[in-house]
Length: 299
Image 1 (tube, rainbow, N blue to C red):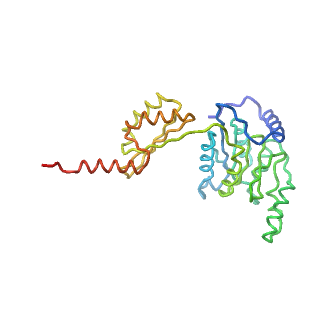
Image 2: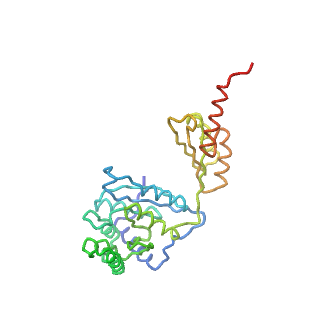
C-alpha cells in the first residue's frame, strides 16, 4: 500500500507545477545520491492489455532496464484509457517515486488521451509543439503523406515540458513534473526511446544478480534459503520451480546492491542446495547421479 499523502490534491498540484518549471532549467540527468537507490514506477495505459488483446512486453523491458541501471522498479499500474484513471495514477506515482514511466496513449486516434490527461494532472497547458511539427513534416513528406489533423494531434504536448530526442525518430520522450517520462506503447519505440535516455537515467548505484540451478525439490532447499536470508538480509533470494524436468527442478536467484554480500550468500548456500552456475552443469551432475544409482554392483 502506498503511504498516505499529507498534501491536498490542490497543494500537490502546485508543488508539482513548481517542480516541473524548475526542471526546465535543470539538467535532465537524475541526481546521483551516494548510497541511495532510485525508485521507479510505471503506468501502463492500455485497454488492450487489460482486455488480453496484447501482451505487455513494455513492463518486462522497463524492469530489465531499471535493474541494469541501478534503479528499483517498485510498482506497476495498468490503467484503462480513461482520463480520471490516468490522472489519479500519475499524480500518486509522481508523488511517491523518484521516476515514473508511462506507456501508451500518445497516438493519433480518439482513445489516445495520455498527453491531455497528464497535462490536466499537473495543471499544464496543452499546445502544439512547433519543433515537433517540423520534424513530422519532414518525416511524412518523405512518404508523400499529408500532415493531417490526427497526425498533428501527436504534437499536442503538455507545456512546459522537457523533450528528449531519439536518433531516427520524430516522436519525443516528453518529461513533465520533473520525474514523469511519457513513452509510446509500441514496443519497438518504447524500447528504443528508453535506451536512448539511458545516459540521463543511469545511476552510480548498481545491482548484482547471480543464478544457481539445482535438481533438488523446492521444499528440500527451503530451510537453507530461509537461513541465508537471516544471515545476509541485504540479499534478496528467490526460488522458481520447474516442472516436468527431473534434472533442473529449481532456479534460485540472488540479488542485491552489494556484490560482496551477493557472492558471500551464494557461496554459503551453494553446497547445501547442490547448486550449479549453469543449467547444463546441473543437468550433467543430475544425470551422472542417476546413472550411478542404476549401475549394477560388480561381483
